[in-house]
Image 1 (tube, rainbow, N blue to C red):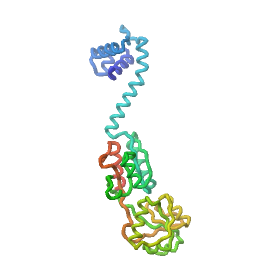
Image 2 (cartoon, one colour):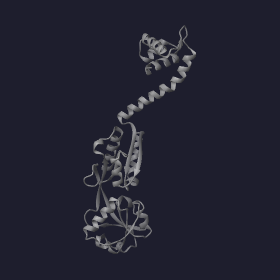
Image 3 (cartoon, rainbow, N blue to C red):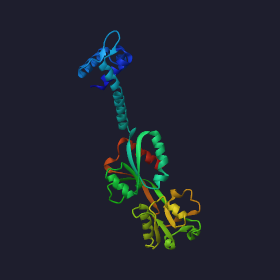
Image 4 (cartoon, rainbow, N blue to C red):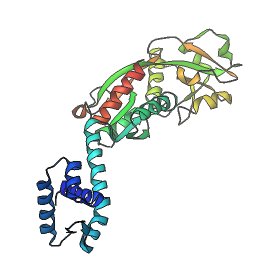
Length: 293
C-alpha cells in the first residue's frame, strides 16, 4: 500500500472530487482513478461509491478515519528523517568536566538549542578519565575536558588554557604575599580534589617540581565545592580562575608562581567518529566557536 495513494484517497474525500484531488496532487485524473482502483483491489473492498456525488462506503469511512493519523505520522517521520540527515535534529550525549559544566556551558547550550530546537542534548558530568572511558565504550558522543593521558585512543582538540589561582580567606597569613611560591604552602592546609581529578594531578606536578614539598591536605570530592570550604576557613585551594570571578566575599586570590599553572582544555571524541553524526557535528563546531572566542 503506497502512502501517496492513501493521500490521494484522503484528498478525494476532502474535496469530494477525483478531478480536484488530481489537481491538488499534481496528477492527471486517470492516475488518480488508477490509484483508487488499485487500492480497492489490494484491500478487497469498495471504498467509494461513484456517481454525481462521491460517497464513502462503510469500509471507506473506516479506512479514511484510521488512515488519517497514520499518514500524519508518516509525514512527520519523513520530516524527522530529513532533519536528522541535515543535522537539524538528533540526540547527543555530551560529557563535561567542571568548571566548564557550571560556568561556561549553560549559556552556550542555551544559544545552541534556541538555534536547533529539535536537537536533544543529555549531559553527563565527570572527570576526564571517566569521560574518556565512557567515550571509548560508546556511552558518550562528545566530551569537554582536559587533555587525555598520553597514548590514549581519544581524539583531543585543544581550545583554551584553563588558568589557576590560589583562593584563600582574606585573613590567611599567605594573603599578605603578592605572589605565592610552592614553598609557602608548607605550613598551609591545602584543599584538594579527588585523586582521579586532573586538576589535582596538575597541583601535584607543581609541588613535585618544587622538590616534593610536604603539605597538609584535606580532600574535597567536588571541584565546585572547594570555594565554599575556603570561605569557611578550612584551608586554601588552587582553583580555576573562572570559578572565582567575582572573588567570593571574605576571600582573596593570589597567583602561584612556577610553571604548569594552567591546563589545556578542549573537545574529546573517538577518532573513528570524528567528525561525528550531523547533529553532533553541528554541536562540535558550535562549541569550538564559542570556547575559542
